[in-house]
Image 1 (cartoon, rainbow over the protein chains, first blue to last red):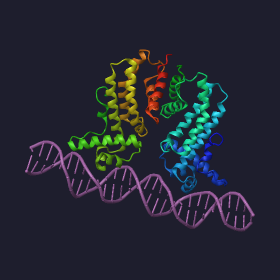
Image 2: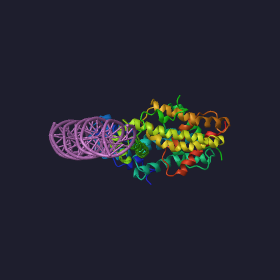
Image 3: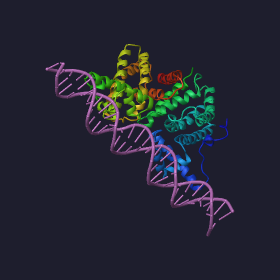
Length: 192
Length: 192
DNA sequence: ACTGTAGCGGAGGCTACCCTCCACTTCAAA
DNA sequence: TTTGAAGTGGAGGGTAGCCTCCGCTACAGT
């Protein structure tokens, strides 16, 4: 219900500190965590995160009392960015707008993949992010569907899961990933 | 080079013991490991695997000196089964044969997903499995492609990665998974 | 039935990581 | 500039999982 005005990161339990040095540490931790999770998955060592950020382990725990806080903060940050991109592409042609946004979505799945295994579907933050993302990307989908570019028998949810699955897989090279995404999108476009 | 006559499990480093009780333990461990990996991913506790199999931890280590041995054995077992299915469906219609086999392949990706993160691409067993699987499923693909059922600009490798990605994703219900696989396969079928 | 040996279980040392606690440091408001 | 509150780092106790070692068990060949 708040998702259309606030960025989702606003409802995350952790709070960016006011003091300058503390705020810098907070940002460094968030960046380090994103990196570590993308690299080692959800099980990444928190001591390693602190090390990457160049801060003590206590500083990590003060800002993010549990692993879950860290997940939610990283995730919300990423979703905010995704929503911003949706606004940016809104004025392009229906199909072009949708696929441009999906391009950014592919990058997002890297973070998501690690976090998804740890954040159950009932997490308040997770649900808010999902809603927020649907509000941002959904209109792009609807517009493409109404323009007859997307077949009528699938939902936005279907499309996201399809893209998410394909892009979350290992590929020897990015060209193959793009080729296969293209093939699958041909299926999405097929007229019925 | 051996893949067309031997099952790949034959080249796995671990060996099924001769003695009756030991062989039973070996099988129990393999089944327990498959279960544990599917449930908890590649990081599953080996002590938990032994517990599930109802044997001591030492018995696990005697049969599978390292975690990697266990991975490779479980994986090879699964691939053998997949090859067997390919033989079974060989006499059906081209497209039907291919999609039936892909149906079994979907189940295989559950095991694969956990193991893939831990087994690097240079693993001898991994390569043998891959080759074996290509020899089994490849002809089904080629036949469908020559029959004009599959577009000409993709490879068997492309198809497997696509299916693997989609089926490895979490879905609230199986119907949605199947629907989306169907959409993607429409893209594979699209005539060019 | 006997017996040697392959196979067994689990205790225990080791390591990596979790998380708390507290003496020290740094910021920013007055 | 002072000062105290907010913030900091890392030592260290606790836990979970890894893997080895060794005295015991039970299979299978004679």
